[in-house]
Image (cartoon, rainbow, N blue to C red; front, side, top):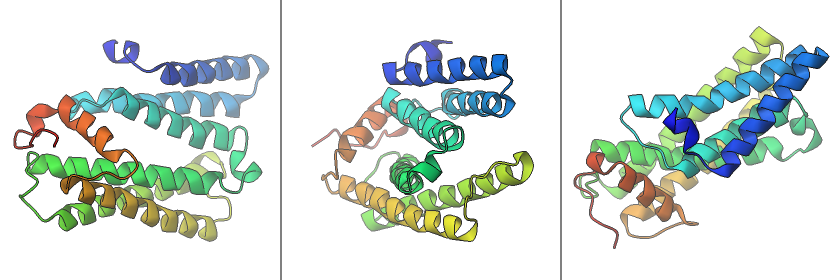
Length: 215
């Protein structure tokens, strides 16, 4: 319960919207909306309960980003049909998520080397981070396919074209995330990425025993 209490205001706003949407949908008999609202809320809780079991501490900004992404993808995308209303909605979400997963992939690989930036070439860690981001993108496409087939949703929209477009954007975003890790190892930053990585490392200092303090 402590994890639920110690979050950003943005996270609480999203949770409140989902709770109100679910209750309203139940009272009015809009079962599909109620299902998506509850399901989205449960998805936002996954990192809160999974991270401690993996021995990780996630910054509140990480949690907020995951919550907003799930809200934008599942709730706004499906309930309010943002994917059809705004042609760029799907592209933006996939691009931003791929960047985030690329950075997270770099950090997870960096953990294997206990934060030793000289244990492997920077380009190799960046490439692995890219692969992690693309792999997650592929898994997400499989998830969309499963949701469409099992629950009758329309997450894939135009089918093959939508899937391939998403994977291309995932590759671009993943490359950006991998480059963020590459530049981090060289003491540089892309768009404030170093500050985010430093915060993660500080919260999980025991996993980065060989990491040097910030230059």
